[in-house]
Image 1 (cartoon, rainbow, N blue to C red):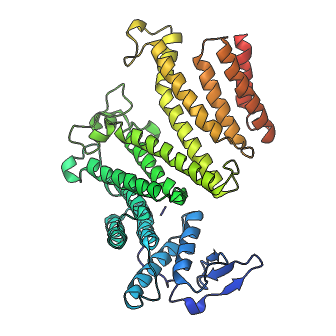
Image 2: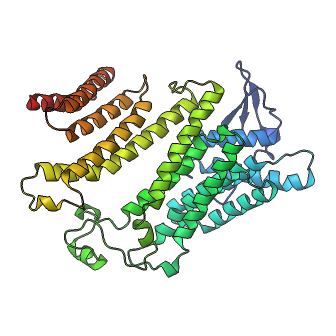
Image 3: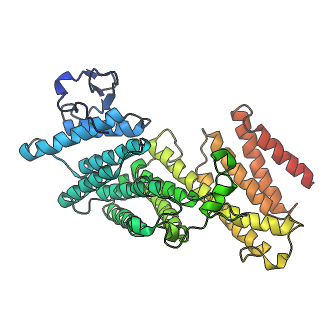
Length: 438
């Protein structure tokens, strides 16, 4: 996602800008006659001579593009530097609000990703990004955009600056308290959310804010994967595994008590928080749509696509959580080689595991159906596969199982036809399963 030689910023290259008004009333602004050019489209109500508006437009363009343009990012930061300096001497010319300071901080945050890929020290970028947040908050206390941005920076900082340097032998004394760092991010997000809701600023529940929750989800995945056993193809043999502390039958090593990630690996707090806040985020997106009289099922609109992405993410999270109880039920119910079935697995009997799995998969389907769009065959297939999973949990030949398979079959046939056979294999497997049960 997201350098130190900074090219000429937007402001100082003002005379070199080529402006052209299109038939749609937008103004196109070229950054320079560089080999790497960028065109920023400004809505007709935006003053093309307003350098702050140009900065905001460039930032939105950067976010909407594939984030591989370090030159553009440097240009954004250079322009932020210039505007901030000039605002001290030309106070009547510039109005630098909370959004400006948030963009400045987030641009520095994105810059850290480029340098992390180059294995360079990213600490200065995160330090400066948080300084920009603090500066903004000193002028705009409690600004939700700044607080959302602070959470985003923290959630990116933990994996890039801290976890990237950790080994299985790392000691917590070598790092900041990761729990406290994360809690700071959680508190910032919660405060921002409360202030945005209180002020009815539902427009802040947008793609940028969803990226904050996404960054935490990515972080939690990194923590889950930390210390997982690598295959021989990845360069680890049995001697390496033994040296690192893997047990023979384990897929992941046991971190020592002093490891900085040990408390995180044992806590469900952050996973629960992520889902709770994502559900709340979705509710606020729906409130925005209702307030603006927008039809959410129109994926051509940014809010429609956002709604679909959030629902799909939630549905997938419930399916993922259902995997363990589903596996326990299947093992206890159908695996004849398992001894002492009455003891259960992980404290669960077959019926208990099935009930938990059914509840989770049912919840997943509710969100995946919300993410079902008429122009998105994959969304139909996602729901179909969830119904197959649910059907597998019900008794063989039961009405519940037949209903689930029927709903899955209709969607897969529809998706297969729309994609010219992309789901043929999955559909055939389902039909075979249905025939076997007859």
